[in-house]
Length: 188
Image 1 (tube, one colour):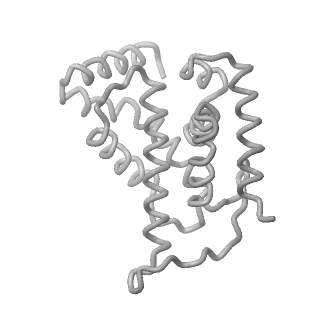
Image 2 (cartoon, one colour):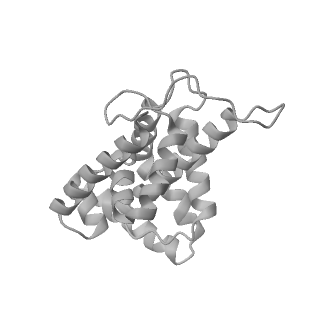
C-alpha cells in the first residue's frame, strides 16, 4: 500500500473514532485487498468445498466490525488485526452451525481427527479456537501473537510493532504458542 493510502486510511480511522459514519464506508475499498488476503489465507486452512467464499467472508466480517466494535481503531495494522479476529469468529460460528444437527440439536462428530499444522494442511477450526481460548487464559500475549501471525498474516516486525514489544519477544512467543497448540491439538 502506498504512503498516501496509508495516510488516508489513518485519517479515516481517526474520523471513525470521532463518529463520522461515512468514514467507515470509505475504509473498505482501501483495505479490501488486505481483507481478502486474510480471508483467503484462512479459507485455505478450511475443508475443501467450504460454502463461504473470500468475498462473503470479508463482507460478513466487515459488517460485524462496523456494528460490533466501538470503532476505536488506531491505525491500519490495528484494524487488520481486529478484522482477522472477526474473520476467525465468522468461521468458528459457521463451523459450529455446520456441526450442529438441525433436527436433534446434537453435535455431529467431525469426520477427521483433529490435527494442527502451521503449513497448508487442514485442521479442525473449533478445536483450534478452543485451544487458543485456553492459551489466552494462560498467556494472552502469546494468543495475540498467534492471531496476528497465523490468522492476520502479519510479519514478526508488524506484530512486534502492534503489540509494542520486541521482535525477539514475538519470535519467542510464536515458538512457545506453536508448541502449546501442537500439544493441545495432537491426539494422544
